[in-house]
Image (cartoon, rainbow, N blue to C red; front, side, top):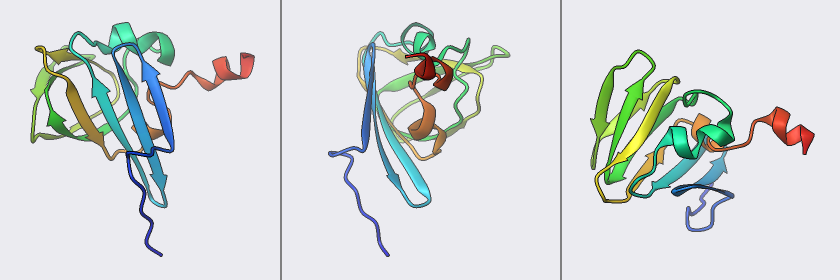
Length: 126
């Protein structure tokens, strides 16, 4: 059976300061589109939601627009931009470079499942 969904009608939308994440879930694929505004930085925007010091989500992505800088826990840095396909392991910070909105398509699954989602322990307390 062929499954088709449109990101224009996501299964879920998660808003966070300076951006949002739209997700669709299909058999064997959890897909996400992240939109990050100029000035966005993970440690300022998503860290309070995630409850972790660094982003602990594994990303497998494609940058459609804008530029983003990634810094790993060991201090190694790289920058990704339009047309780049990347894999970024857990344990990183990230921020928008410049004044252009960043749009990233993420096929890794972990992003759609857990990114910018309040930790389950915190959800259970609510």
